Length: 262
Image (cartoon, rainbow, N blue to C red; front, side, top):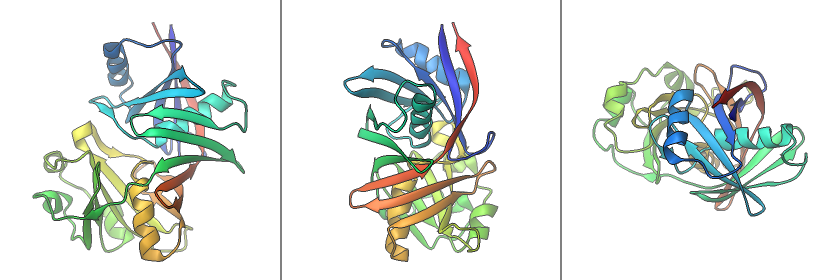
């Protein structure tokens, strides 16, 4: 019997933010079983945790594939480990992942993840990206995972209705679209994230995308501490601090359900 816990990340209330299913393993699991579970849960990510060294081996699976870096499922995993007493409250949690060592800590009611910075560098339209988005870009960039597209304003970001089939033809994990926030809501920038190639038409809140968004906006706005709002239907807040080649991602989470699999 395996228990999976669904946690909404980057939010303070249920049914907002980004849901992730978390499975804490006692021993290595069959690969196909894990993939089947990810398909069955049908969430952006299902995370599998296995105790290792002084922390946990952490893997993230979408319904389609395994990914190299995921912020919301890491934050959700840390929240579960502290809440259910697997780790003492206030202790640092170490995760061993495909993207190296990631850590999580608690401070003033927030969970802070220490992630690698993944800045985007300017890149041309790979062909079909701009037309698929249906919006004029101010800037296009690319990092090892995704495309980053800045558009004119928050209204443009919120109003996007991209051609998902055309976006799926773009060779990248996903496409993040961003602008400076309109002001008045406490956010510095807004974004949305589309990943149809990964089986995720639109991701509600994408922590790993902020590893690129944070350094991008820090350079443009001249500040290293920023707050982003991902303007999906569910919505979520990601606080960011740029520290050299690392980015701290801050957020909150809430447990919403538990499921048992035989």
